[in-house]
Amino acid sequence: MSAPARPVTAAQVTDAVLAGSWVIDLRARGAFAAAHVPGTVSIEYDDRFATHVGWLVPWGDDIVLLTDTPEVLEPALRQLAELGIDDVGTHLLEADEATAAPGTSALSAQYRRADWAAYRDASRIGAVTRRRPVVVDVRQLDEWRDGHLPGALHVPLHELEQSIRRLPPGELWVYCRSGYRAGIAASLLHRAGRQVVHLDDRWDRVGELHIEVVPAAA
Image 1 (tube, one colour):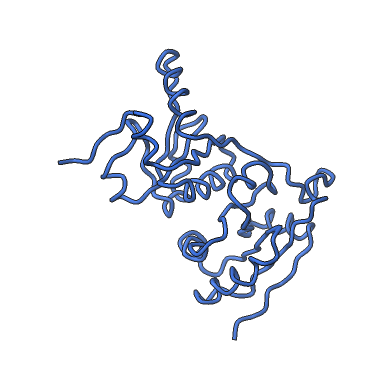
Image 2 (cartoon, helix red, strand yellow):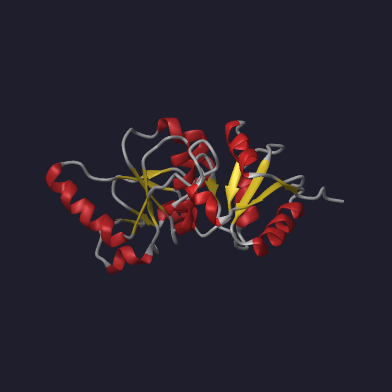
């Protein structure tokens, strides 16, 4: 029988982050980018949630789930239990936490989101200034081989944690097929202290906007 969830306080959330626990925010990736607890990871809740937790979180590491929607906690916990992951901490974010005092679990961290049109514009400016955006593609190898951005760094999401130190300095633009995995990747990079832009847009928009792509090999 699975161990029940452990409700934790806002102060304990901060302690968990400082202790190196995986504090996972289940909210929509856009809400996370706009405001989140420093040091937390975004894995937006849907039917893929537990799969990504299983890929990313080392077995046995402590997990705390955050959300502002209590209805998602039970299904999220059930998904994790199906993988054998239990004794998970949970914390329900309250509205006043966004304005909490410094040193508490205030939602004080944020990073940029952009669509492919914004990337196209940044690339055009970069072509003039010779400072093109540094782009990280976190899709799987078969997706990469089907076409990718010129100069993109290919680091599949499940390998990102081990590869962060090898990425070049400066701002990183992160993309995938739909924006979901890129949201997770952006939060991991941001947790590691990197400046990120989450490209939260569909890959097929690249073609619609006539953005240059390295095509699939014949």
